[in-house]
Length: 233
Image 1 (tube, one colour):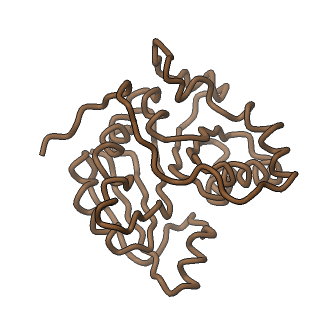
Image 2: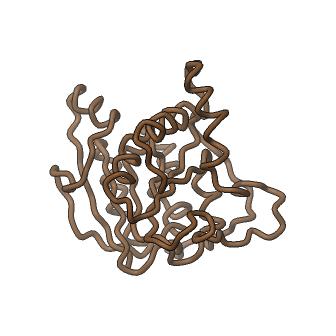
C-alpha cells in the first residue's frame, strides 16, 4: 500500500475529549499563569500562510536532542523524563485540557525547564516540526478506540505514522506502551510500513520507565501492559 503524502493544509477531524470535569482553582491558575510561556507559538493556526518549520534552538534557547511525547495524559512520565535527562529537550502534545493543567502543576513542583507543550492535536505539530529532528518518541497508553469501526482513529495509522517518521532521525527510537492486545496487533501491522523496525517487545518495561496513572488503572482492572520499541530506518 502506498503511504499517503503528508498534507499539512488538509482539513482534519478531531476525535476525543478536550474537556473533562471542572478544574480546581489551582489548575485554572496553572493554565492562566504558565501555559502561554510553555506553549509553542503558532502551532495549529489554520490561516498561517507560511507553516514555516519551528526554530527549535530558539524555542528552547539551546541545541539539544529532542524527544516527543504524544498524549502525555497527566504528565507524570513526561516530567519524570525531563528531570532524569536534563540534557534533552522534550515536547508534549495533549488536547485534553485537564491533563494539560495536571502537567503544569507537576512542572511547577519538579522545577524542570526543558519542556514545551502543544495543548492540541499532534498533527498540527507535525506540520511545523523540521524533518529528522526527533531523537525519541513516546506513545504511552493511547486512546484504544476499541470499536472496530474506530480503529482508523488510532495513532498507529498512516495519517500519524508517516509524518512522525518524517520528523524522526534515522535510528531514532519510538516506544509504545499499551494494555490493549488489539492495539499491539495494529502496531505490528502499521508501524513497520511507515519506516520503522521492531527491535524489542514484551511485558517488561524500559529501565527508565515511570508507571503512569493509566497503567495503574489497567493493572487494577487486570489488564496486562505490553511494551514495544521500534527504530526509525
